[in-house]
Length: 218
Image (cartoon, rainbow, N blue to C red; front, side, top):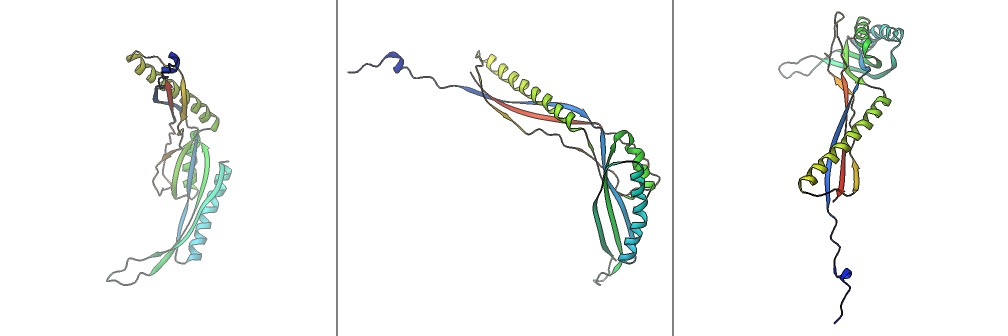
């Protein structure tokens, strides 16, 4: 009969772990408004619609340049026919054409309402989209804060669970960082605006959020 040492006979107990996910967030004030607006014009022919578009679009572009908006660029150009509403299953007929062109630009939120009114007064009659943004440096700093809060939240959860079971945390065995969300905030505007529109614009804040998952041995 062979006798093994006591240490060899005692199996090492498996390591026990607890997995917890913490959440953190931080707010950042939006500083800029990003517009996507433009001009839509009708004509009886494609050439007439395009000519009318140029007549309305050129003063708008000139005005935006005078206002020194940032990142001004053309985002979309369209020309398409308009049809009548046929009755008695008659084939639809072309009754004219519509031309449109959209511009994107960025301005400080404090000037956004005034610049929007000025753009409408200079020929803009369609607003496709308005969103808000904050500087990357501020968003990155907010992400760091959100991650720190997420870690603290996960550790607090683990401590509460283990303490209630009279157990003690030993080591963090693994760390997983979830995607940090910091999307630009969309803001809905009426599709078509009149020249006498007055639009107060408030940007609010961006909510930067983070999740961190910890696996902790005990």
